[in-house]
Image 1 (cartoon, one colour):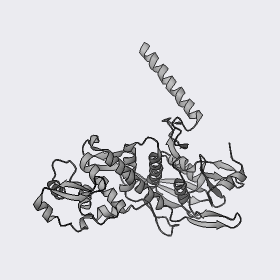
Image 2: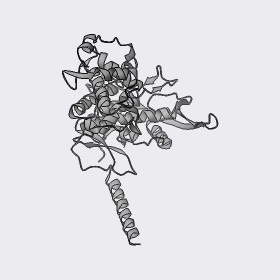
Image 3: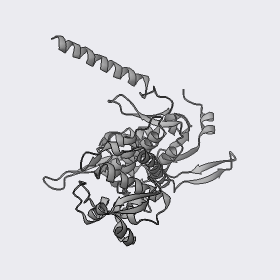
Image 4: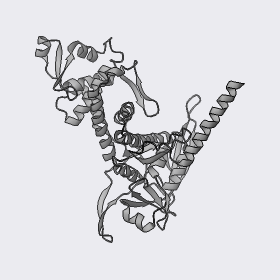
Length: 401
């Protein structure tokens, strides 16, 4: 049921306005044998005005008509439902809702298409991570993948002429620390190496200290530890340096360092990670060593990463007082800020769930207690059930032939 205009405006948490975009795509062929480059061109259409608002519950961030009529709900869910590489659907979204930022209304601005889809993946990963953390049953493999993807991916930079400064996705402090780990002062452990075969490291996962084999440490730093495939990975080497010598890091950074070291030292060293393909290891990970202390540590790290990711996109949001309504409100300038603000307003009782119909893939808001609601709509559920029924009949006919 569509809420009335009066009630909707009374109950929403923030509002802002923008304008739709005209979108085109240029395909540039660089040279024979090399992949083509897809360039998106965006231009604002100022003749129309789009009004947005946010309301709690299954409505979320919505688009309104000029008179306040609800036209499209769940803007965030509609965005993250766009499949990677589906340029037509991406353009359709921008034409309905405008671009993430205010762009020129006099000329096209060029954007690398791959960057935009990676940006959508990053927003999707943030939403999925929050939902995974609030779910009744936690999927630790999914939480691990999403956390490490957000934490270890290089920031995305959009440098548009209309922006005073380029937009950059969250720069997690840990990423800079691990890159510069080789510059850390090495803790003097001469007496320990003389007295025994291990270094005592203050540890947040296995407190108060963890005994690290000195031979393993030296082999990792030297890049020739034969018993652990992938130990010569530069990131793992720097991580080991951080673990042993980053004694002055604050608690949150120390929790990240300790978890990443123990997970890779015990379970498996990570070779690569991205959103679509998940985590790639140098060898088959030893899942049995992913114990309860490490799982508890993962939840803490995931919460840290999620907080950093959301807070990095709230800088442009400011509180203001509505003198007409005599109530507090928020000043929001861009669609990007509104999207992350709507993630910010998600509660522990709500989560985004992906439709169980594999031919749909839409994301919809549900209560965490709604374990039976796995389809975005009754129509989608019926369509998929009919599809399964046809498949079953076809399989039975094939067996009798």
